[in-house]
Image 1 (cartoon, helix red, strand yellow):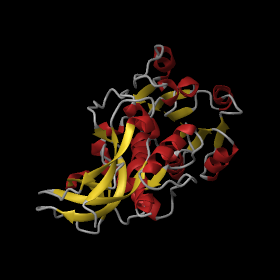
Image 2 (cartoon, rainbow, N blue to C red):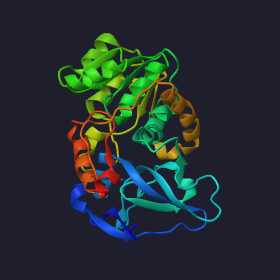
Image 3 (cartoon, one colour):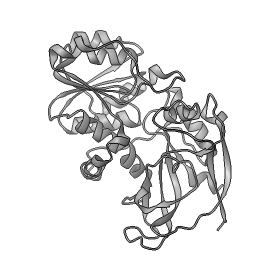
Image 4 (cartoon, helix red, strand yellow):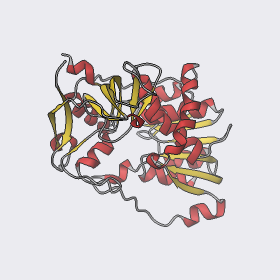
Length: 340
């Protein structure tokens, strides 16, 4: 076994993730007391976050150069340090801690890792993006059985899981995505109405078919879709803001818009921010609800069709996600590329 491993390190701030990063060799770190050493097998890609990090445009994460990158990874425990009793060599684990994702190995506190049933990429998606979907809908959105919910970017890694969770709760799902393939995919997941923003005006469709009927709307796009969701909230409706991709453009993650008092006051509606890192207390309950749903076949995980391997594949995966062409969760087979 080699005494080194590789990781992606942000070395300089730059317009893109690829331009700012290098793949570097590092010495293997054996675990100290309370730590574990993990071989990463798969990582999940968060292309917008990665790009904003490369631009030093994420206000809530203070970056000192150089820094390692990536958030989500699934792997196997290679060694455990003194005092670690909850994890053992060979266990499959997931981490969702920043700097633990884009690397072939990760040594750190055992508390940073969650044991999952097997070292399959589906568990990476469920433990990271799936938990985000569950918390956004049920904790921040307070979604109830049978309500009407609108979801933007519904064919993406987060969106396609939100659609299924809402359908499982007996909700009427209005899904927004772009292009026939994505619309057909989301429709196959049970969405009652799929709006193709490339050929339909989202605001006009909602005003005609769902005026003042959205109990919950979850938006990660912003721009005109956010406006359309806000305008069509029901009485006591909840708009959950989970991102602002259309408004970023390389600028810091600060969302500014006109005052919205008139849109919410007369309906008793609300606009709520979903920042998953502030909601860690809700993650165990979300996993307890979500994992059995997957094991019982009530939801499925779909991965993007384009396969990426090795650390070098992370760059292509980030750009794939940013292209808008991906469908489902974008992941990278780290170990597959490393063994070639």
